[in-house]
Structures are given as structure tokens and as C-alpha cells.
Image 1 (cartoon, rainbow, N blue to C red):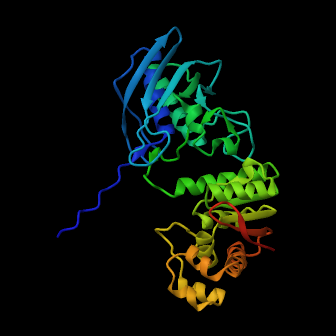
Image 2 (spheres, helix red, strand yellow):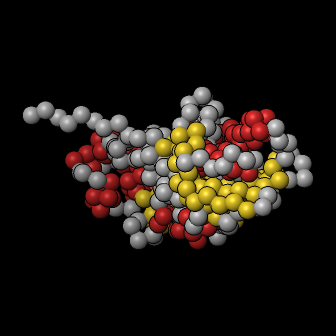
Image 3 (cartoon, rainbow, N blue to C red):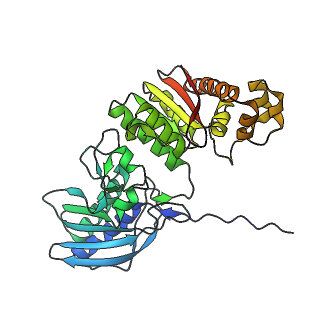
Length: 349
């Protein structure tokens, strides 16, 4: 029987691209041509996507347009959200404002200064280029206030890392290429990096990377760590450790269940079940219990071997983490928890 051909995942567009498209059609209306039903912009690498314009409004000295974000096949929380831009004359130059649903930066370490709207540098650059282009086309001074809103953005932001990064009141306007590539690991790893940057900029001496919500809650409570010290490592141990090697903090705790930490102890830096597996023969040798070579899961191995197993794994994982960090000035702890969140093993330098 023929196997079905793999389907190509559909790309989408970033909030920055949507905001740029909305800015362009709003400027067209402000300066006399009127809104268009479909607007095209040029992305940083030359691609020219088209966006359907929705919910246009206009008044004396201002114009506003919306774009519905299409994230393609990426599980983006902002997929389907309306990105709205209102343009109006400014006293001089281009001024960016956070409308409803767009956050304000409250902590250092991010690409945008404290107190500024959470509109990242590349989207700002894209909108500046559109203002200059439209101003030249219509013979107008490029002095514009751009206020960006995201409908329901404050609620959606609670599903992101923004509150932990110190972005208050809404979402960020993001994007470097304008394109959302579905299921990309790069966005998650970039968020881990930004979390480290914020921790360093705020003088946070102790950070933690955990494999899931249960281990995160346990580690945070155990050390009484603030939210911004909790880095959303997930399966991307390598993404965290390699960045800390170049950008160290004083102390790092890695927390997780016995299966994920076993893989880390065995040298895996991507802990996702689809990309790394526990080597049970190696585990049996590590623990010194030949019975473990024939088990199916790390949890089953733990039930057979008892407390000696997580203690051995924690120590081995500590050595594996240190090997990745090399001589970086970071003190490391490893914490292993059970399914109920109880600490069953700990290793410290």
C-alpha cells in the first residue's frame, strides 16, 4: 500500500508584518487615497505577501486599519488575533505607542528599552520604511504616531512568557523576517535566551530551567525564586546551557522528572521524546543494576532499582551539564522529582 505523501506545513506572518501592513493602508487613507481591501508589503528578504484589510475607521487627523494574523500551521497563540494600527500626525518623526493589548517593557535585558512599547526593533524598522515610502509618495512629512493594538492581547499574553520577562499589559509585536515558520524550535530557544538576558540585566543570581510545569513549581517553591528567574527550558536543555556558557549567571538549577533527567545524564541536549530516548543498557551500567537493561521506561527502572537510581542519575546529569558549560562561572544544581512533585534526588556542585 502506498504511504501518504507528507504534507508541507503552511507558513504564516508575524505580528510585526501584520502591523506593517495595517500601517501602510492606514497611511494611504490618512493622506488621501483611502483604504485598500488588500495591501502588500515588502519583507526584509524581498518577499511581498498580501494581507486582507479589516475594520477600517477614520476621523479628523487619524486613520485606523486591522489585519487578522494568520500564523499558518504554527500553534501560535496570536493566530487569528486582529492587529490594529492607528496613525496620526506627530510633532516630529515616527513615534510608537502601545494601544490596548500591546505590552510595555518593565525590565532591562530585552531588545527594547524599559518604558517603551513592546514593539521589537525589526518591526519598528519595517514600519519606519513604510512611513518613509508613503510620505515620499504622497508628498507628506514623515511625522507619524503609530499606535498598535492587538484585540484581546492582554488575555493572550498570559499564555506567553511576556509576564515573566517583565512585559506588562499585553503582547509583543515580534518578527525578524516577517515570516512564521511552523513548529520552529528557534522561537522557543530565542525566548530562553531573552529570559537569561533579563536575569542578567536585573542582577538575578539564581535561575532555573525545568522540563515541565510540575518540576518548575517544585523548584521555584524549593528555592523561593521569583517568576523572572524561571527560564522556560522545556526540552531545550542545549539551548539554555550553550547560551549560559557564553552569558553566565551565578547559579543554575535544572529540574525535571526522572525520564528527562536520565536523557540529560546520558548526554542528550534535546529532551523531546521524538528526538532522544533513554538508553537502558547504558542506564543499567550507570546504576550498576543489570535488571534495568530490559525495562521499557525510566519510571519502571526507578521502581525496580529504588532510590539509588535517581541519586546516581542526578550526579551524572550534573557532570553532563558541567561538560556543556565547560569553564563558565556557573554553580549547578540538579533536582529530580516524581510525578507528584516530590524531590527524589538532588546533586549540587
